[in-house]
Length: 214
Length: 214
Image (cartoon, rainbow over the protein chains, first blue to last red):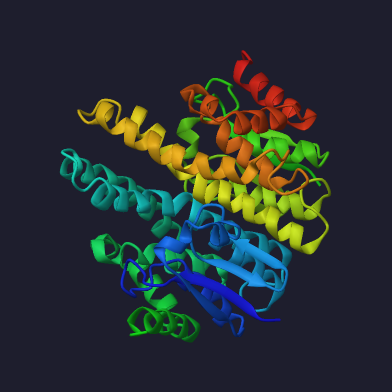
């Protein structure tokens, strides 16, 4: 059955791989699944046809026959449940891998996204410069804990899983800020994620869409 | 097998049910499962014994034999996967219910938690009052979309699920702010969640812990 995902017609990051379709592409590549991409313009995101698929007017969405899903975490989990390669078969290890998916999205990503709020959405406000160090310190508090947990391990819980896919994707948002360089273990962890052939293919595919001339 | 969760020895909200153990208690009650509670002091949250269970030093955690989980979303999903009452049996409806769990935690909750940042963490900053309306408007943008999706439906996707449990729990954080009163359909939705006997039992249990004299 054909899998179709949506992506920005032109990503705000110009193809750096930070738009969330990259996470879904990565999961599909790890699972060895072919997929089609429907690019969506910023205008079309707010129109009824797209809102019927995604009530919050965002990308990505996932269509597979009659099934329509949104939320990157839910899409990646759906792929991981249906195909090998993203979740361990042992029941306890599987629940721990899912725990790390939620940890990436619920615990790590919100303070990291606050950097976008501080720098871009509120970048023209009088408090912007003074507020930034507070935001950075809240991110560092989480990175300290994550780095302590990871230690010298290769992945968060024994073998690579959808939990690592999500955590690496979230941490990649920090690269431009330089904060990640303060954490050598986490930097090496992110690099291990990026080195996976499935990530490389996902990254190349989103870059091609964002640099095409059509 | 005995299920043990952790909760604050004294919740910062004094028993209003906003600490995340209430969400896990609610899921356990919907599934008809007995559980034990290990109260954890603020000091103990940062100590090695607790950090071994929860790398980010928070509550709740979940223990069931050898299995130790953290992250409310992962714990609720684990309970929902193992027991009837929280996820539909139809595969597509099940994936949609999980989508709403992620939507509650990844899309709705971050702007709502920013209200805590603005009012409490940064409540003494010179920008606090001027920034608050921006935070409120970002919350309203999400509530507008959620209310449009819900319409006059009873639950987010046909029948009550773990997705509603999580969404109602996230929206309850807004009650004290008064914003929820601007959305009659969402207010009624939250009230339907609170009216469930399982929620009532979960709320009463967390209140009893927070008002006990021991």
